[in-house]
Amino acid sequence: MHVWSAAVLLWLVFTRSSDSRQWPRVLSLAGAVVLLMTTVLHGDLVNSATLALQLAALAGGGALIALRAQPRDVDAMMRAALVVITIGSLIGLLQVVGVVPIDTWHSDISTIGRPLGIWPEPDWLGLMAAVGVLLSWHLEVSPKLRVAAFVINIAAVALSFARAAWVALALAIVATVIAQLFSRQRRTETRKGRRAAVVTLLVATLLGLAASPVLREDLARRVETLTSATASEDDISGRARILQTESLLQLAETAAPFGHGLSAAGRVGVSGALYLKAESGNDVASNWVLGLWVDGAYLAVPLILFLVLFALRGSAIPAGQMLLLVLINNLFSNALFQPVTWMLLGLTMLALAPKDPRRPKAAVESTAGRIKGWGPCTLLD
Image 1 (tube, one colour):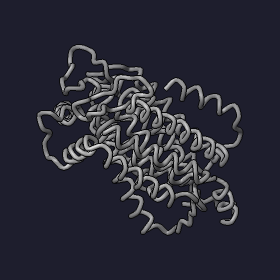
Image 2: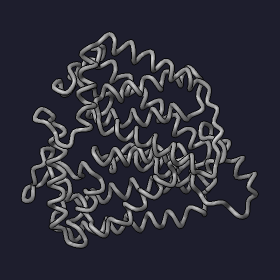
Image 3: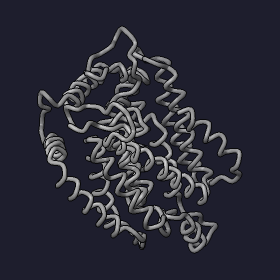
Image 4: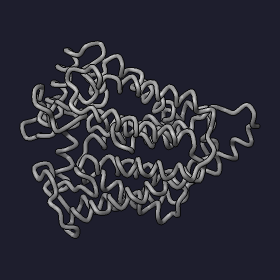
């Protein structure tokens, strides 16, 4: 969070122009955020008032990207994200085989253990690796880099055993296919290395599953829990999610029209226990929609709708696809108060900028075409 804020401020030093077409959207986002921030002043269960400042910094960074990012900035952001995420995924794979020494998590879920990568827990590795999968698919990179990044990130998604990331990646791909079928824009991406990436993935998957019966059993058992209506006794994380949801619903039922105050949802502990009198060590909920409703009730609705609207409208373009993936993941493992959500929101707002009537269509298409890896006309509405 601190690195994000410093990076945005440093980046502003080197930017000059801004896009006036984005101001209505930026002001709408600011209004939705300020409404939610005010709940720390009157909420009865506020756990940490400084979460409002964190929300302001995150949303402000996303808004600045939408306002001031140029094609070269977008290219730099996405390439840097792919590099960092892929390195984190590679470190996670090395943790699995013991090359990088670390205590992997949850040997009851996976016999080989769930790696962390460079993140604090396996669910974060799964989420970031899933974003890396989409980045490696869309960005204009060399075929060898595409194959390597795609396979490494897919493997990290699988071996993190992060069900939230599995579901989010699958649903984001389905939504993307549907959106592109009905989109007026016809994407003509011809990214070299995609076929090789898919073939390499299939070969690596077959070899890995054939060589490790234990891995086959662990993956099959984890996939089976996705279709189960209730969590079994040994599904600790699944039961924890159920208990957390029940406690969030309990808080939601007792919330005033203006909510319990931003950060109140964090009073639901990891095991679902409620910390109503003592402060909780957490400030956000595992489910971002329920959490925001507990925090702000009707005052949170504008921000929820804003995020959902841009994720759905942008599902036919790369930035929107990744934003949709993150928001779906946030229903189970919440990254709403982390930079990844807001960077992707800013890039989606940028890509969906309304047409400028003062500029001919060809000029706008030319500008969009210079954003490497984002395909032609991605800035068109």
